[in-house]
Length: 229
Ligand code: DC
Image (cartoon, rainbow, N blue to C red):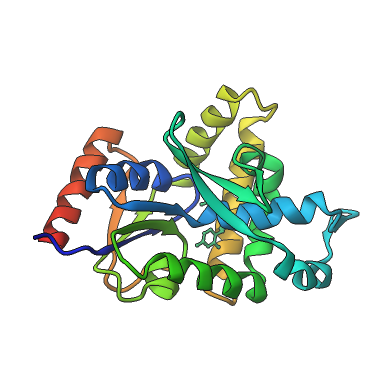
């Protein structure tokens, strides 16, 4: 019988981590958890509750409200996606806007936010059979994960992908805005004090600039099968 493992997928924003993580979980019959959606959910909540005032985040107020935020995922059979809910409200599409992207890295740098979410993420792994993607999964959430991947690609390539995605949802954005956001998120994610984005020593690097989605999936599935057997 195959052993059940934890697969940690970390990397820069817009590297297609969630797409491949989702495909992999489906192929293995594992649960998939998008931890970026959890940080995005907190950002969305803060914006909704007026905690962004005059272009500043009211950090103390957010810290005090953390116990009021319940994040859950519910599988939507029709879309095939585990959608994010905040206090019972489906926020799956609201958390993907550029506006939320502009605040989320600042929110993810707050230690109190991280410890709340990391604790929930560790609970999700008690039975293993999990594919989780984020920035600190292989380093902080599951340092003993059996397979760790670190995905990357140049900022321009990632911004182009993100721009096309937002455009397909008819968001009014320019390529320069998206590129600026990608570069700024990289900067905040890699330089924050608490759990910065770094490659775990034992993570396998996947630069997907020149890989098609299919090639990338085949490569990752074969690594997963090796780790499982
Ligand atoms: O993967 P994403 O772009 O949806 O993530 C949104 C933000 O959340 C990203 O700027 C970094 C942060 N994040 C994090 O700090 N730790 C994680 N495990 C996942 C995401």
